[in-house]
Length: 593
Image 1: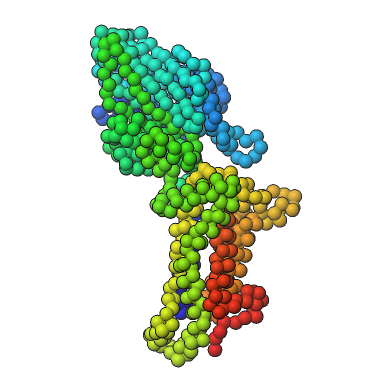
Image 2: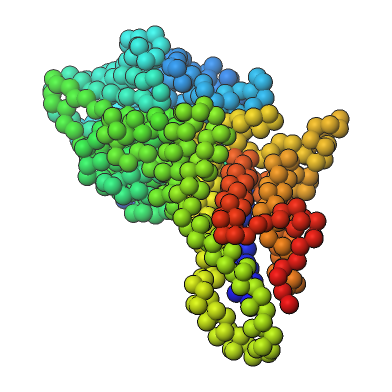
């Protein structure tokens, strides 16, 4: 097998490495009551029961028969949350944010589809909420501080909007008065100000905390390319913990003492919650799993409330979509350390970050993410043009050397060492690098994977239309051979169906044709192995990429089209006149004797 065959097989094998699909779905688990913060843990690690009243018969019944969100919301007094991007309510029971949907995002593209729900109250199928409170240290007991079932009173405000804050009040009737003031901005950031007024005759010591709890195992897409679980920043160090790993997480592994800057939360595909202490503030960051609950916490140092005095504790809570613009503004304007890294950029972050930045910029100029992908492809191909030029020139020279290579094969016979030595001398004399043909493909592999990552994890691609039938660049082409692309009166197979892998859409077919046309710039080889690989590769890729996001398929089509044009022009500049139609019809044969 000559070097061209080896290069082709190597390039094919490397290309197949990026076609990885691995879906594992994890069913949701049953739900129970949330654990207390870190400080309410016995020395032996046993979680102490702080709010015994939460284990009421009503709660036990709700765990056995989950309620709808509407029913659960209706069972407690609430304050409305209404901002440009958020809608929901805050429960006066516990003073927790536990009912939140995203105004800008629907669950599907179907008309009338419900809004994406981020948070849900206890009693529903998948409770998910944020709670802020105090842990007693000196001079107070657990029943003298507000807990998860404390009934707060609305002291001021009627609804929580960017223009109006609300304040909740709870008097423990033992000399301590607690308040929580909530505010929300135009996007997804809540500010929580907790205060304690001490009317007793003695100092007390408390520790403020915040927690986010998820009851039962959250729904996961289960795809290796996407992190799902805890994400936290601790003094410049980023850590990701998968949901699957949390049950085995030890106390020491889950707990980090942060000296200056950090945050912690849960990150899913597109959505995130995060507890954000004031930058420069010391705190304990904790991730743990207990009683079938996934929980993250921020616990702050002890504060002393003097007799007759009061103290305040401020923190922030993010709950929303991982929009690049919004998260970047929080990082830059509020000083939230590396908050943009909460988006899962992956191992190739040095490529995924700039690729998305350019894609976002192009989308801002053009106003359409599909055309932005094509524009991005043009930029990438322009940057790689010098490398592509050398590669195509080398391939053209090797084509000219084909007759001499055939003579060497005849002269060498079965002496492979003599053949290799002669071919290397031939390459050296004519200044040809046989490996240069692989370089553009090697460069394309990390770019392809990085773009795949960008399309999969960034919400800006979710439900982004291109043109015609392509109304979601993050999803596979919805057309199908099964119904002749909508001409026959029956529906296409569901995307999760095995039939969808066979009855592919229009764009994957165009992809296969573009690869096939690119091959036809040269006559078909005579060597059987090489000829078979070349003949089958476009159609194998066509079916393998048929279930991939249409945005990625669009990139590959644009890339093939530009590569075809570049190679055609470069070959012409080297005196080679490709006969594409002749190669398609099989009129042309490789130069050989």
